[in-house]
Length: 406
Image (cartoon, rainbow, N blue to C red; front, side):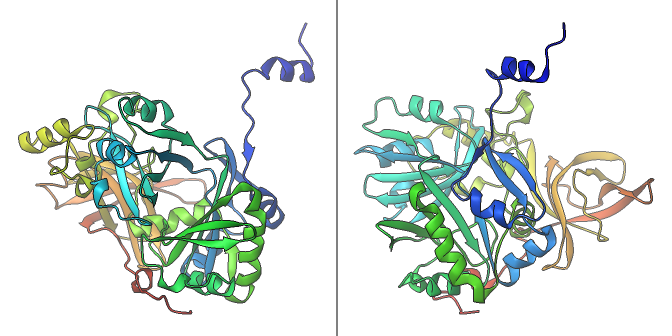
């Protein structure tokens, strides 16, 4: 006998994982015209809200509000917190000042990247680590012997990214007095209702922008405060599709999109060392021992690095997402992981991984194989590509202090 629908659902209940709703879901759902959602770390997140292209232009022209609550967040505290994080991550945490943010990454013992993220120093012995993937078992195992407490706070701390040229004007209008003095990668606490909101001058767009963190109980009131203040400054809610366009222009990479993390890679040759994904500048070889140090420095010394991550400029205007890269149109050299036609740079740009020596010693005569749909038929095109620096765009307003009231 074939069970009915309700019976089948009941049988599957023990393995079904419902998507959680973020603290801001009610506000975003009310604004949503596309009903376009995706799963981010188990949460229902907006891929778009009203129009992917117009949402991108909100980032570059006015102010864009993006829900970052699903971003995994860890509270790390204790007398050994600094020493522990200095052993865990690639950068020198002793150089991270109070109320400052540090972009960083961490590796396994083979020197292969487990994830990248941002490290917030909220107190002398208090940190917040934000990242793409969940790593609590690894963090706990790495903490053996250290006087430190680690707690995931993803479900208790709500987060918003406010990005774009009028983002400062929105915060000033909302009454966050002194926000204009906040420098890039600096943090400050501001009053909000009966609690505080932590605001950092950080973001994932390469533009002027901020990230705000507040207890989930005050999430909706924070949204309403920003939304009300932003009405005269073109504030719009956006989804990930628009953010992804902006981050490509900024040259930022995404775990398990532009590189496979060591924990998620199913094949041993898919994991990457920091130097193979453009994160060599994070490695501080002068600091005390850290996870993966020996393997990273040995690969440099023996010149055994196998890959390189590069920025590409490609002729034409058709994005080369997922395209294979060739040398002299015949030798396979690598793969494009992210690509767009950039409205701001007016260039066809891409982030790609090449197999050395391509991209290192051999940098000329590179081509990408693009298949474009033309009325139900695919047309194959070979387009010339050249390696260019990242980021693809640089905006002075990103670092200006105080920012302009656009």
